[in-house]
Image 1 (cartoon, rainbow, N blue to C red):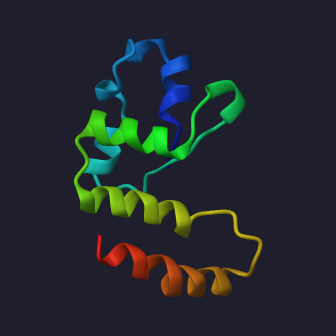
Image 2 (tube, rainbow, N blue to C red):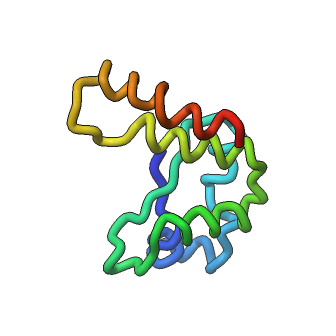
Length: 101
């Protein structure tokens, strides 16, 4: 599940400006493959640092949860290569950096 918290705050009146009400928290707790994105950076005026900061603060993410969320983004990214090459890249370069986090 790809989520842009800033965009959701701008377009979801039911949140009332409170990200603690966002369903992403429950999705993370239930073990779904959640990652955060910037959606439309020009409209939402955000970046990945801001999105992750919002998530950490609103959902009180642990370092392990944050690692999983970032790694989910890499694993499910749109890489212009065959799946096997993408998987090899993620295993070789991405997972090594996050295993020690």
